Image (cartoon, rainbow, N blue to C red; front, side, top):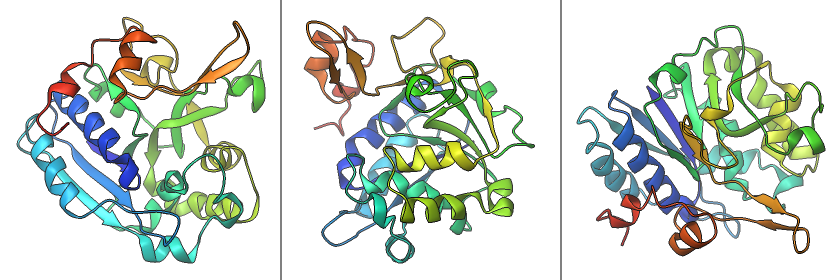
Length: 264
């Protein structure tokens, strides 16, 4: 299986947690692809030695697991998503839209945000037939109210995406998304562009659970959520925030992540 993460230096702990959780639950050999970039004044990329740390961590699950780190600073700087560089979402999120330009990225890859934790083996999910589409994912928890169709509910959350890179390269999907992000300001630029332009498929929510953990949840995504009492407000809690995970979410099942040697 092939899994891809994207991020700057701030994403290091999240990626480490994600890889650790994956390798604890899935024993199929996995190749991890990490995309990062350095852009003066905007992004500080992941250091090369970080891939060595990840490789040691990944091999705890299966000695055949591999980790590759790609610094795409040069190509990213040429096609900066200028209209969306100052949104509340880090520009590093848009690095995945450049993965079609990396020859080493295989024809099928599972993209994961750095706040998505694995709870179960997912070989059956990875083997989903996506030969006739470009991306497959789970509808966004709030998307149907703000961005999509309430009845169709086909606005996908981009935190967990099965990507058909062969078809994406052939159609030029990511090139179209890069152009859109470069010229049009959007609330969630990469997610919005993918939903607008991609040939896509909906998958069951257990593969990207954005609310409370259920018995069948495979991937838990720690997205921002809303509470309405005593006043309407949003809450963002990430897996590495141990006290908040315990006190505000009541989640303890990922405590093993805080005990790993690399956490400190």
